[in-house]
Image 1: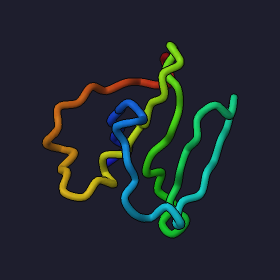
Image 2: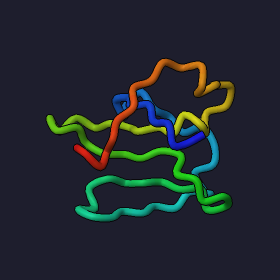
Image 3: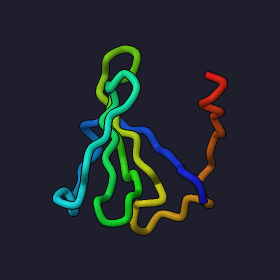
Image 4: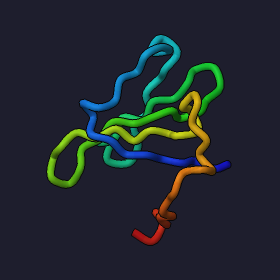
Length: 82
């Protein structure tokens, strides 16, 4: 399965464990804080701001325990064409 993101207001996202195993990467305009697992290299989530300035979390649903991403309704977004 590919990268599957769910977006949530940042105040609604709470990392319970694993903070010490994360490393940050910023590219392009360096506005998005991409957080990767130091052990496996997967991007688990990112922090950014919406166009209106409100803080948001982008969560890789594949990293959530107990969630079956293929059972979620989704919307494909072609980021290259945006």
